[in-house]
Image (cartoon, rainbow, N blue to C red; front, side):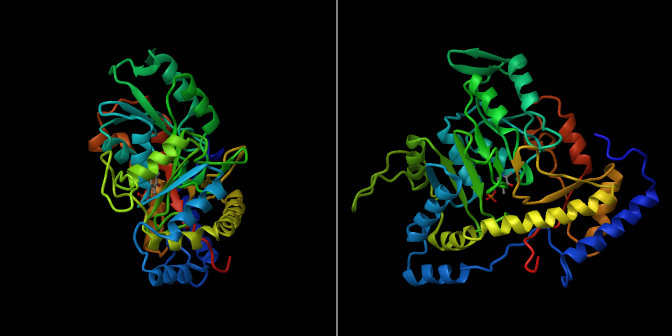
Length: 397
Ligand SMILES: *Cc1c(COP(=O)(O)O)cnc(C)c1O
């Protein structure tokens, strides 16, 4: 991808950095410090949280948990929704439900938040890294399909990785920064190889591809409601699926696998205490009521960034892929190279504008450095250049 037709001089870049920070300050007027993404509590949050306290139902049973799950089903169109303590727990459960076992492999992207790989490790499996697509920043459908064709073997209904002999038990694409990945092609490839897809939609609640909500394409999908996400419950997550057996099992396993009984304690699996507390669900309901407004507010902010970067070509704004509608959770720009990226990070963070580099690529971390992988030139190219810029819902925007 060429960012500009001519090489950019050092001076042009440093004045571009100063101008960008000035522009961001104008987008968020009256703020001494501009965070990357701060939550907004401008709806019924206080009312519902106080109501939850008054009801005495503050833990994992209560009307807000049921209401939040019903609202997510309505919003996403998924048939089953099970609330969890956080998005990482939701991913852990989804991997168990998809039938991932110890010593198996799970295809995912090296460019993601650590939670994806951590959850894969909780079930005793290892990530298998496949490169990302330069425009979606999610798993590359082409690299995936090439990999499956050339490096795996199909036996008795399962796909095995030739080099390690291990079964490929699932594929977890992630919708990076809210931008939908090439989800239909990924699902089609995986279907051919009988590999279940779990969408890590932690960042993309409300983003759609071909009009369908991210998180609802795969066998299972997961969301996060951490404080830095588009809407928050303080901490929280959700598992969604259309599969009745998996939906019921998700609820059962996250509730200590307790067999319903009026008084007896009977448990039929090793279960987890992963249910979302009612107190958090109360906040979540109030936030979800505002999700569509938040997304249009964020999309308006992106329009302003877009206009700005049409003139300021030292940086390239990441935009939603064709056919997709992004929630624009976090805006991101690509710098011409690593040293310009570092200059932007240093200057902005020194001047009250919070920016962050991409995550360190998973295959470079000690825990995952020996995991199998394809060549990862795009992930490495992106990691050298990408910077996230302030993206909060604007109160007066
Ligand atoms: C936020 C996030 C999660 C889940 O995070 P929690 O903090 O556990 O809710 C998972 N994957 C990705 C890509 C995320 O950004």
